[in-house]
Every structure is written in structure tokens, then in C-alpha cells.
Image 1 (tube, rainbow, N blue to C red):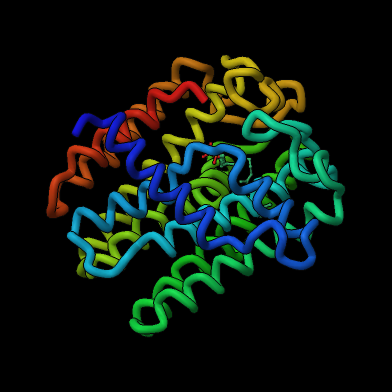
Image 2: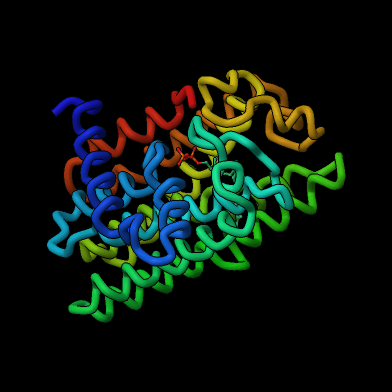
Length: 293
Ligand code: GRG
């Protein structure tokens, strides 16, 4: 199957999983569940859950990776809702539509984010009950990635760095590794765990995820500086206006593009030692490097 068709097939599985596993909009209190579904179902590239499903397929996983893929998208979407709040990035646009607090209100958006984060762990508990060791490992993997030493810690470091204009390359890498690469790494590892990957193979997935995550965030910085709001589906040019330290500000556009390429190549090299048909994952990683939004 061609890459685009295969990507669409994975995305369709994710969309159906999201629709099926998230409480109906009519569930009491309806306003909360409407907001959760609004944030979750209104777009998004679905890169993290597709990475999970594709990694699971490398190992011909017998355990369904879809629930944990959906859980990862729930955690990611919660982080976007909270990031957009006025007390954080204060943004009006996300995934090409009004942010959740603009569409609903701040309190509802805050609770919808909280509920999506919690739902992620409910889904893992419910759907991997028959494989308790796997359920426990998935829980730990995602809780670690989303916790105060990774995703939330990266966000905190990012907020602190915004207050100064002289953040160093080391500080920037800490932010990117934790705010962006942690969830991308957990997505690949979760797929490997569902497929019964060995410890060495899980380490390889971690290496690939770390470099893919860095490449993804550097590309995000480049797009913020070069693409328009309509293409991005979120406000463009925010970093420069805020005087924020990014790879583009520290190193310039050309060097930032070169760094992104190097990290992409390192991620691709890591994949080589893994089993299975790597054609789709390779093409996905290449497409993430060349993305326009
Ligand atoms: C609030 C705990 C907390 C964390 C927020 C996700 C995040 C951390 C901030 C959003 C801003 C940002 C640039 C994050 C880096 C990760 C990133 C590029 C997220 C956007 O991911 P995409 O492009 O988004 O995959 P879609 O909408 O396609 O899912």
C-alpha cells in the first residue's frame, strides 16, 4: 500500500477508536463531554497514535494497541487545551478552530483537559485488564512521559525560559526533549510494548523517539517562523513576537533545518535494527520532517 493510503488507514482506525472510546457527548454533564469531544475530534494529525499502531505492527502485536494509542492522543490533546489557556500560551486557534476555552469557557476547558488526562489511564486500566503486566508497564511509561520530569516539567521550563531572552542551547534541548520528544517516544515505546519488544528493541525505539521528537520540535520552530496561520491551523509567528528562544532564533533558519535533518537521519538509522517491515515508519518519519503544518 502507498504511504498516503496506509497513513489514512491508520488515521481512520484512530478516529474510530477515539469516537468509540470517549464518552458520548450526551453523557452527564453534557457540557464537559461535549468539550472533551470538541477538542479531541476536531482535527489533529494523529501522529502519536499512528506511531503507536505502526510500531506495534513492526512486531506483529497480538495485543490491540488501539486503546493505548487513543490514550496517548487523550494526553496530547489535554496538553494542547491547557497550553492554549490564557494563563499559559493564551491562544485563540488550535487545529484550525477556536481553542476549547474560546468555544466553551476557561473552567470547562480546564476540566476537559483534566478529564482527558484521567481518561487516558482509565482506558489503559479497562482495556489491558487481561494483560495486567502490560497494563502496568504502559501506565508507567505514559505517566512518566506526561509527568513533572518530562511533559509537565518541559512546559514549566518553557514558561520560565519565556521570561528571559537568553536561554541557552542546553536549556532549549531540555525543553524540547521533555515537552515534545517525551510523548513521541512514549508513543513508539507503547507500540513496542504491545508487540512484546525486547528491552534492547525498546531502547532502540526510545532512541528513535528522542531524535524524532527533537526533529519534530525544530521543524515546529521553523514552521512558526515561515508558515502562515491558515496553513498551520494555529497562530503563526508567535515565537518571534514573544522574543522566545527557539532553534531558529539561536542558530538561524538554515542551521535549524540542518539540525532537524540530522535528528531525522539518526531516528531513521535507529530503526534499521528493528524487525518487521519498516517502510511505513520510515516514510512517516520522513513526512514528519517535510511537513507543512
Ligand atoms: C500544558 C502540561 C502541558 C503541556 C503543554 C503540547 C504542549 C505542552 C504545548 C503546545 C505547544 C508546543 C509547540 C508543543 C510542542 C509539541 C507540539 C509541536 C505539539 C503539537 O503537536 P502536533 O503538531 O499537533 O502533532 P496536532 O494538532 O496535529 O495533534
